[in-house]
Image 1 (cartoon, one colour):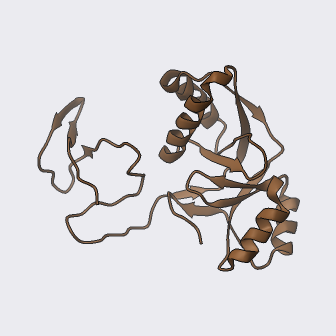
Image 2 (spheres, helix red, strand yellow; image 1 turned 135 degrees about the horizontal axis):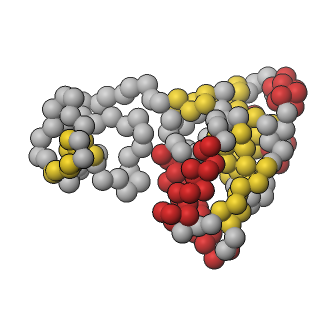
Amino acid sequence: EIKVSSVVTFMASSREQVEEAYAGDIIGLPNHGNMQIGDSFSEGEMLSFTGIPYFAPDFFRSVRIRNPLKIKQLHKGLQQLGEEGAVQVFKPVQGAELVLGAVGVLQFEVVASRLLNEYGVDAVFEGTSISSARWVSSDDKRVLADFETALGHNVAYDAAGNLAYLATSNVNLRLTEERWPKLTFHATREHAARLG
């Protein structure tokens, strides 16, 4: 349960605090990591709508920073930008290098600019051997654990904690799908949703 306070309404370029909002009103809620895109609010009744889809990224970059002392700011910035949907952030099971995924290369420029201006992080994005990603799920947790152990160098967790397979080619992806028939490889997932 979230107590909502300091609700702001928007009209053209003006903003004002409101106590009541009606259907069709556009409001802003302060967020400190409790809410995500696709969340629904009601008074009492539980609502659940289909969320906003995340598509498997087509472009990938590894990220490094020019000033190693800014690592905390980098992680905080990427976490928040990932929650917003500006970029998809993958944390490999093996290794410390974060991998960013996007559906267009312009997203990396936007993320670099926002990291610099909002978090004071001068980030450099470099090419990577990854060519596609698929979120992985299974009803059998043992199979998921075996998959993670066997292919740890190509397995990562996204910002929502979902397991993803990072393939180096389409052939690599197809072969992996064939070798792991008890797993489901997803090209999309619902924003902020956990896959089983």
